[in-house]
Length: 186
Image (cartoon, rainbow, N blue to C red):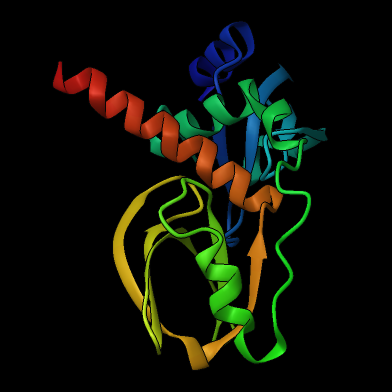
């Protein structure tokens, strides 16, 4: 592992560090290390510096690097300032009886992510079509993955979230992935 730690330290390569007996992990790059401990510059889920974590090397179960997750976060960290500015400041007024449709129609075919709270889950995507009783969204994952089209019943929508940092993160990574795929195809 020392070789990985050295690469992470000198090249600021991101690592995901999993500890024994824990399903969670720390994401960051190595600041310093010894045979007994590492000092990890930790990053939040929004790509911001989030303190230094000192970890006993004995407790490390595995280290992941240069995978989809760390590459996505590398891009996010480099562009995290783009998540700070809320671009939607106000919505057109929505009538009580028609609130879901009025809000959804404002984002129909616009390239702006929204999230629907449906049955205690948050579904994020671009609004592609609205009907009398359903909405079709182009679903996007938290790391910008294209999850295809999904249809939701209007009656099941509890809330609609617009322009949150979580959505701006997903949108940034979605556009990055889309651009990467274009370059691969050329």
